[in-house]
Length: 300
Image 1: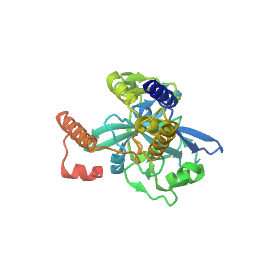
Image 2: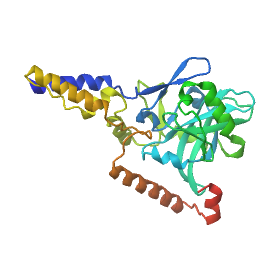
Image 3: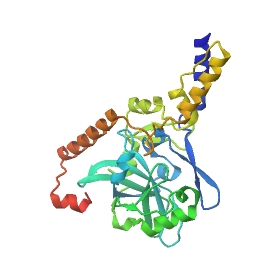
Image 4: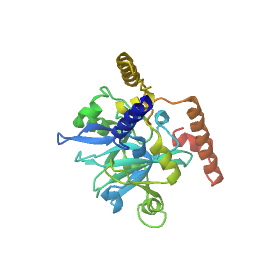
């Protein structure tokens, strides 16, 4: 009886933790709230919005901020980005795709959607919108970080004052042979009901399932599943005490997602170091040659 009750509780709580359903509310300029995913499955590849599906975007080669190592995961290929028109102040949907080593440094490809007919200023931002970086990988000073989420006007001011003009970056072809569209077409497709768009990822189906199976413990019900002992007893006192212990433990448990507030085991730290080294070695074998001056120009 005790085992049966425990299994029922776990099943109910697991159902509450919908895959891809972890979001945060980001203030928009029209006064509404925009739901932004913080779930690891949402960062396994590019979000295929209608603009990206149709090739209506521009792509640029930018620098990977060193501070993003606090959010790096070997299976993560997308990072948050923001872009605005320099003259109009219009926000253009943007995202950044991890490219590994290119031109003697770790790189992100910035994607800016829409028919852009004005200079664009872009920036990268952490998973939970707490820190901002220009496209050269340098951190932008933010006096009131909490307003990046709650105040759309403030977020725009930060990016326009400290971001980078995309005209200063190397452009990447979107269409044609070896263009971004051809690259995305060769990637695998991930569809998650809780996410607004399907994802294209270079990961294999097996690796995507690895991310899907892992409990990120970002919300309370996920933490309860991951940390609760479900101390169900025939004694009412035991039930009461067990419930207190489980809820208290879950409430104080660290997240295990891909944002900088999440917990990382030492074994995972070692794995990340090995992945970065393997990517660098692979780039060298593929013909990337780097002198000391090349590395300095790349900002490393």
